Image 1 (cartoon, protein in one colour):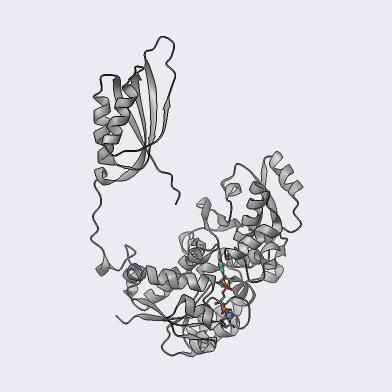
Image 2: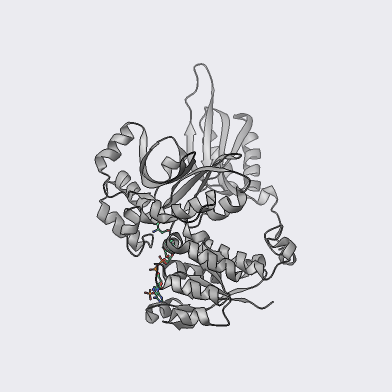
Length: 436
Ligand code: NDP
Ligand code: HSE
């Protein structure tokens, strides 16, 4: 099937990330979408900078050239700001093209006009990347929680301010220094006052509120307070009282109307959301049937945001590829594109281990144990030998290993259990750090 042609408006942090992810995962994405997704043209201001990133890609300084190109099926708006983004999106819709955008500012201000135009033309405007970076929160609320009457949403939805608050608290860094670092890392908006004054969070909250409660976008009604008036003193006193301060976006349905507010908020330190640090975002959604649900992930940055942009591209592509009765394939990949990768037998699985054994407290026992582990190619991360209990000759030895093959660990355990100085079975618990 003919590839889908994508025109990128903007090749900055998110545009560059989108191109990288589409290129690196090209084959896997095509297996999911049913067609290849190719970026065929991009619009930027600075051609030299863009050429260094994408030497082969046709570039233009006129974004309307991309929107008007009859060979382009989907326009991805990653320029940011209101104009010319609004005019470009409306023109793409007018030309019958689907649009993907990460521009929460544009949607919060002009979403009502844009969605009405898209409805008229029968095209999609997809915006998963506009809220929560890589977290699929739009899909979760619009599809996964569709049975619920949503009662409230509360979220850390600005990565820059969360990063600033975390670095100031943990490292005592200055506001100005951390903001500069957030800009360097590509988290901040072109105008960072949008981040620190809570405006970006209010743009995102406006979108969340609309899809949660079925109301039009009403950004101008939001109450907005940023983090610039927060003092280190308040952060310290809040901690002493058992709270953390986070910039929260809160929208709640009440009998009198809908709350729509962004402000620094004290949250009990034991709550999961109080421990969301750095540029990570987390959004709590309370539905009447499901209760509270929590969505967590990278809220800003090139590839996390690109993850959401590409997800929208796949959704739009599936409109024109898939079996209309099964637009989203049952197993996520197109049925004729399933792979033959084998499921590994447990012996071939690699993980780290906690091993506990009871051994006689005699010279040479530890050496025997470590030799058996080394012979099985298992390296030790940490070891602890407990003091013998009063009148006891045996002690507990606890070993943490680095990642090792399960079949090697089986072999080592069998050897250790065969030592005369070992009594009983070796307890084994697998250990996963779940980090990078
Ligand atoms: P950048 O400033 O990094 O990139 C903007 C891109 O748009 C650049 O390539 C710039 O070109 C180009 N551009 C700007 N104006 C024009 C114009 N008039 N004509 C042609 N090209 C133009 O922004 P981001 O990638 O950070 O953000 C893009 C969008 O994504 C924004 O709406 C932002 O709010 C949103 N977003 C950003 C996230 C992030 O983590 N950064 C996360 C989620 C959403 P040049 O470089 O040549 O000037
Ligand atoms: N400036 C935004 C943030 C980018 O820091 O969260 C992601 O929307």
